[in-house]
Length: 455
Image 1 (cartoon, helix red, strand yellow):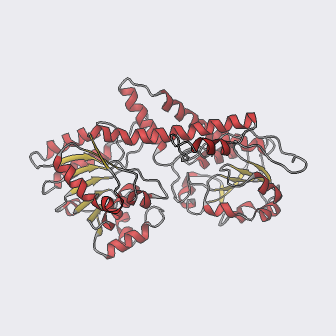
Image 2: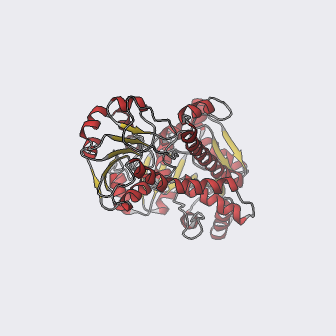
Image 3: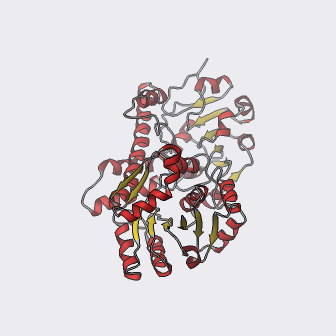
């Protein structure tokens, strides 16, 4: 089939590349001339493992192309996916749908044959109705069908998620649209029988928000349980393991850490709350989740200060990990931003290293010394703080770290290292939601009551 992808952001580029790898002919359209030029040179605008190779192979095969010309991109399209940004709108937190509606209008003005227009962007309930109104107004009697097909891609694992999904959600009750969507996703059914869940359009739109809100609640729940663990002498990792072994709960998203961030959870929970408020149906649990997560990040920064003796003025803190999660360069709502700002407000000097996120972080962070690796960041620092659990941070030479730090203090906000192991290497160590296990005399570091969250 011939597919047009409107937008070459994270969702549009990954989806377009994967559809072309299924054997479809895909044209990705974007108004950003520079981005299209770079994509034609196989320079990716985002970091996603495996994406550059996937794009390159399908471009060479003639199945994937890029253009700024909307009419060219829409020529003979069987399906047109809208995959543009829906950031939080200033003032009320609602999703900004201006790009979605602009794309719908452009499609209607340039479409040349009956097709299915599919909203891939994350949009509030009822957005498909407005897209349909725009299409009907601009291009009546064209035989165009409107569907919703929300994405469920995790940054850092997006290609795997797209090709091996738990399910594919499609919102349309029209037979013609269902037939087209079945054909588009037919390779998934042939490979492993991934179910396609057909629903009403509004139901599909709500499924995406409800899923992300539930995961955000699950993260925040284990964060607060971690707080309780610190007070009662329990271990949050063991609690999470015991909970996650229950098939009704599952082990995913039960990892204590410094708070969720990224492109989805923060904006999607806010947009869901706005929809709920507009419909006089407040979601108290989601409201509490947003409030707790927002407060976690600076609170965590303050507790790092407490771990360093309560005064960080003039001291140097080495931060490992800046992105909101590993295997991405995404800095949107990353916990590191609030943690670093809190440390700087306390007078600390901050060094930082991240394997992929430093270029994205530089415009967002002032007076931070960016380092080429973990050991240069730690050399002479008064504390080492792990914020993002990149794989390369899981195999640090802890003895070397203990020797090069000005003070051998490790604050592990992702519970990567067993406390006893780190302390055998000579590091005074704090985790999250865990009892500190020191051998010998306790160090001269005050007890730390860590908070938790995960992304």
